Length: 119
Image 1 (tube, rainbow, N blue to C red):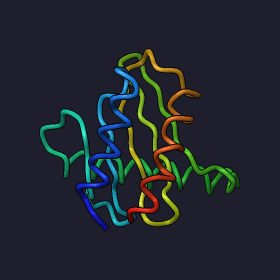
Image 2 (image 1 turned 30 degrees about the vertical axis):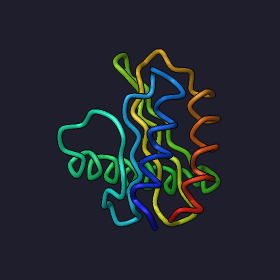
Image 3 (image 1 turned 135 degrees about the horizontal axis):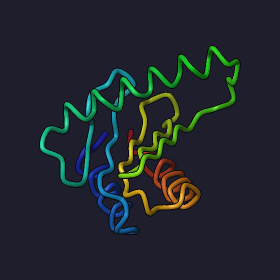
Image 4 (image 1 turned 90 degrees about the horizontal axis):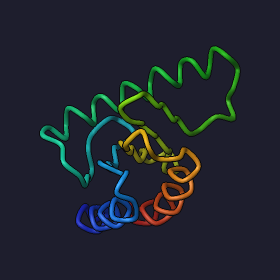
């Protein structure tokens, strides 16, 4: 695994759309592997994304929606998306509220496949 190569992929992803503010790969145990974007404390945000994933997985399990793998949460100020990376972790993206959920999904899945080969 090369964190530098993963960071390069994250940089490319962020450069595709000005609405993508932060992209981060977090391991399945909540450790930040790589990130790109302005964030003062990457490890803290990695922990936040990890906790968000855990809470959403509990909700999904309670509702018997086991087929759900992506998480997309939008507020007035922005959006957070979480995409699994083949059981090795997940890609977390923080974006502006202007971005379309479908656009984030298409872009992220393209880079999930690239990053998966690097993990």
